[in-house]
Length: 83
Image (cartoon, rainbow, N blue to C red; front, side, top):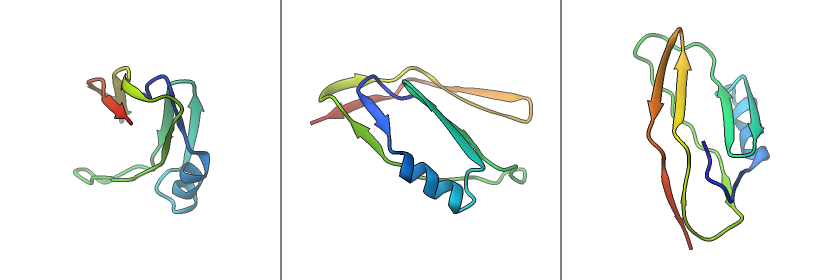
């Protein structure tokens, strides 16, 4: 989940697809869905993409959801401070 006032940078997501870290992505207002290829049990994936603020101040996102293989984990909302 992304807070209001933050947009995802599409070229940075395209680079993740090109690198094979993400098979595809979908963006909408306030969110980005990343589809990661299947991982081995216990394998961890770490990636970075760019987010562009369109507002300044203290922003909060909604809770994020990580899902896969029939399991779901809800991640608490993130708090962003943009100067």
